Amino acid sequence: MLRMIRVLWLLIMLIPSGAYAKDKVIIAVGEYPPLVSEHLKHYGVTARIVVEAFALEGVDVEYKFTNWARAFHLVNEGAADAIGPILKNKERQTVYDFSDSMLYETQVFFHIKSTDFTWHRIEDLKRFEIGATIAYSYGRAFDIAATTGEISVQRVPSDLQNFKKLFNDRIDIFPQSIDVGYYMLQTEFPSKTTLVTHHPHFVNQSDNYLAFSKKNPRSQHYLTLFNRGLATLKATGKYEQYFQESRNGDYIIK
Image: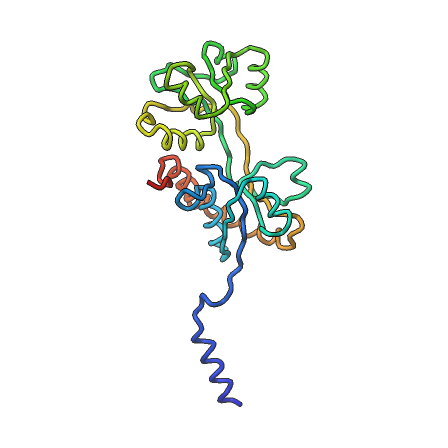
């Protein structure tokens, strides 16, 4: 009997460490480049942050790419554990448990470098032709000023059209997420990217989160691990490093 126990112990010791199942989180997402995309290195900057935050706590991550509506459905039905980055609202808070903020998405005004542009208040925008995208909100103050005619806003169906108008001098400035804006410039207008800059004063800001279904019994466990790993990435400077790499176009697959 003792010999058999020794043989069994030896066999156990010979099993590779990778053979033991690790804890794994499944995250459902849609395309939102450069923040998350199946067609980017690391699946985009927020995906890299999520993967590495969990890795610091010994948890693997699997991404399931689909459209955003189905991503919500997968989480609601238990086929995925989490979804993100997403915004938080009262309705969603009844269904999901939210992480600490994983992304502070900032909208800024893009403009041609040669344009003499500075602003701090809505009143400062009156002398500029502003591009905007139909059905998009740019914050309460901007939206009210645009609706009342206090500022001159030309709306078109897409962000891409607004950048084209910017290059053709048909508008002076265009509000867009700083990360999405630079990604569009790098992928759609690579030869003109150096002609454009943004003003540092933000138009609008919003927190984005990783969200777990309240029906998942392990939601709080995963949230604790993710929040701890995220805090470590921020404390070590990796969080800002990854966002800067993304804005430099380093995650675009050439």
